[in-house]
Length: 98
Image (tube, rainbow, N blue to C red):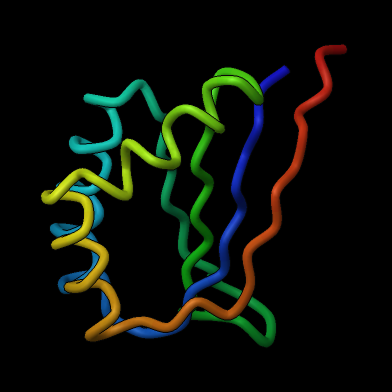
């Protein structure tokens, strides 16, 4: 079953976030990781970011964690993101195959 990390971030405009997110998505794709970025448009979190990172299964998630930690490009992108956005929350979910 697919494992997803769902994160809520605050900070950064579309003009700042989108180019960095594109670079992160490209880096993740090299590892076989899915990446989706959305922006809250209504409610108390309007303007915040919703990020979903997907892994094929638990084994893949456990294997790729250390690989991402060693990936210099990903680490540089994470540091850049930290300059303009803060993570509010992160939840791990198991997607059900219905």
